Length: 272
Ligand SMILES: NC(=O)c1ccc[n+]([C@@H]2O[C@H](COP(=O)([O-])OP(=O)(O)OC[C@H]3O[C@@H](n4cnc5c(N)ncnc54)[C@H](OP(=O)(O)O)[C@@H]3O)[C@@H](O)[C@H]2O)c1
Image 1 (cartoon, rainbow, N blue to C red):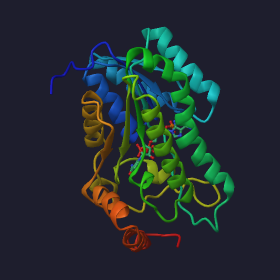
Image 2: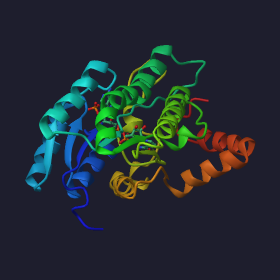
Image 3: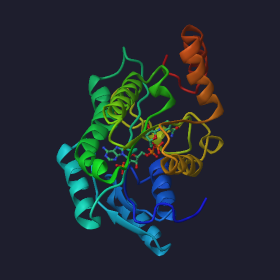
């Protein structure tokens, strides 16, 4: 693939301080896009900005908490005032949880929903007029659990199902407007998501139950996502296990429930 396919394109990526978002920002920049880096940890995204600029790319830091509508509005406004428009919005910022519904404090579900669902809604709302003008792309980094159940993560799964429904309907509403809406369902990917996941009382779980280095690398996810943006795809499902889970869930839902339950129950520290 040529390296300049996104020259003159302006991209916002939320959740760029680690994992998949960081890798997508680097990949977009390597394809020539100017990249706006948006997450709460200013030091980490400023460091990433330096790395991108040193490598010859263009980047802008806009520290943003996506749960705050005004900060999302400001993110879009700063991007447009700095670069003159917006072509690609990658809604990637995300937070997970791990607790059974009968144990969990409801504030945990609200925080997860505010980040994964409302964060995407706020950014997309203020970005859409510019995306319509540029005939650009709205990307949502959902999850395999945007399609399937995942026990111990009711709030996370609900937020990702909501995200899927929101983005799929946005796509249909804009069928005549020439914009692209890409929904990505990653499988297990090496990142910080399990360490920052909320416990039943809302603290971070800190440990990951998985061997992170055996999962799909975030850089591989990023390459596939950016290729999907360039090829104007509508959906990407990742990892062999993830694709299989989606297929079985759609074709044989009762069987999928049993298989997913068994698999997740065998996880270290499973809460059910
Ligand atoms: N890794 C996986 O196995 C996997 C699988 C399926 C889907 N996903 C999805 O992939 C996306 C990226 O996650 P990841 O795996 O790369 O996890 P990660 O390494 O924990 O990265 C999450 C990013 O989201 C940002 N974030 C969290 N809350 C935020 C907020 N309120 N405002 C702005 N940014 C916020 C974090 O930055 P700050 O803390 O600096 O704000 C961080 O940069 C998520 O939507 C996740 O649900 C991941």
